Image (cartoon, rainbow, N blue to C red):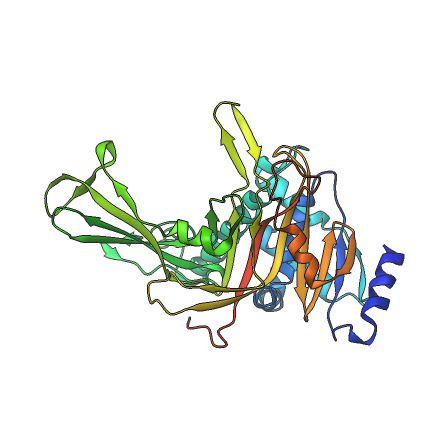
Amino acid sequence: MGAAGSKLEKALGDQFPEGERYFGLENFGNTCYCNSVLQALYFCVPFREQLLDYYTNNKNLADAEENLLTCLADLFMQISSQKKKTGVIAPKRFVQRLKKQNELFRSYMHQDAHEFLNFLLNELVDILEKEASASKSDPETSSPPEKTANGPKTAQANGIQKEPLVTWVHKNFQGILTNETRCLRCETVTARDETFLDLSLDIEQNSSITSCLKNFSSTETLNAEDKFFCDKCCSLQEAQKRMKIKKPPHILVIHLKRFKYIEQLGRYKKLSYRVVFPLELKLSNTVEDADSEYSLFAVVVHVGSGPNHGHYVSLVKSHNHWLFFDDENVEMIDESSVQTFFGSAQEYSSNTDHGYILFYESLATNDKS
C-alpha cells in the first residue's frame, strides 16, 4: 500500500484534509463485505464521532468484556489516531469477534454486505441498551431491554407503556414508518408505526431511487384472500394499505434489492438493473409532506454477475473528495465516475459493479431529534 498511499497523498497534495486518515483494510480471505461497510460507517462522521466519544468515556472498559461495540470503537480509534495519513490496517480483532458472535459469518463463503450491516447495527443497539439498563437499575428489578431496532414500539412493563431507549445508534439511523390501512366499507384508517434502521427497496430496470421510493409508498388494495379485519366493522373487509415515512432518519441507508429469488430457477439471481441514485436526494413522500433533503456520502458496491460470488468495494465522500476503497487499496476518483455504478441498462453487460447500499446524510443543520 506504501506506493498507493503516497500516490493518494500526492493526488490530494495540500488539499489533504487536516486530521483525516485514509486507510485500507486488510482482507482475511472473504471479508470484503465487512471492509466495505466499515469504510462507509467510518466516513459517516456523526456516527464515527459518537463511537469515538464512547471509546473515550469508556476507557475503563478495556478490562471489561470484549464485544462488537468495543472492537469497532477500538478499530475506529486505531485508524483515527494513526501518525501516517494513509496506509493499511488489519481489522483482525473485529473480524474474529464477528465470527465468534455469529456463525453466519464464519464460513469462507461469499457473504452479504447488507446482512452484515443489519446485524452490526442491531448488535450495537443491543449492547448499548444492556449497558444502559445495567447502569440504571439494580440486577434484581432490571428486565432485559426490549428490542426496538427494527420492529413496532410496543414494549410493555407491568402493563404500562415503556418508552424504548433511544441510543446514539438510533439517533443516527432510526426512522419511523407508518403503515396506514383504510377500510373501504367504513373509511376508518388504522395506522401502525414501526421503526427502521435501513430501507430495503425493490428495483426495476432503468429506474431511480425516487421512483423506487414512490413504489415503496404506493397504495396496495387488500382483497380476495388478503382482506383486512376491520375492528370497526368487526369483519374482513376490502381495504387500501400504504407505507409512509413518518420520521425520516438523520442518516438514511437504502438497500437496493439486487438479489431476487427466481422460482423457475430455484435460486437467487443478481439484478444488474440501472437504478440512478442522485448525489442530492429529496425525500418527498413523508407524512409531514415537507421535503427532507439528503446528500450521498457512501456507496457499498457489489462487483460480480451472481449472488453467491463476487466482491464488495465502497465509494466514500470525504471533505468534498470522492475516494474508492477496495480492501487494502484507496484511491481518489472523480465525482462524475459515481454514475458508472448505477447498473446496466442491458441485461448482459461487461460492467458488473453496481450500487448496493447507499448512505445519505440529512442536510438539515439542526436535526430535530
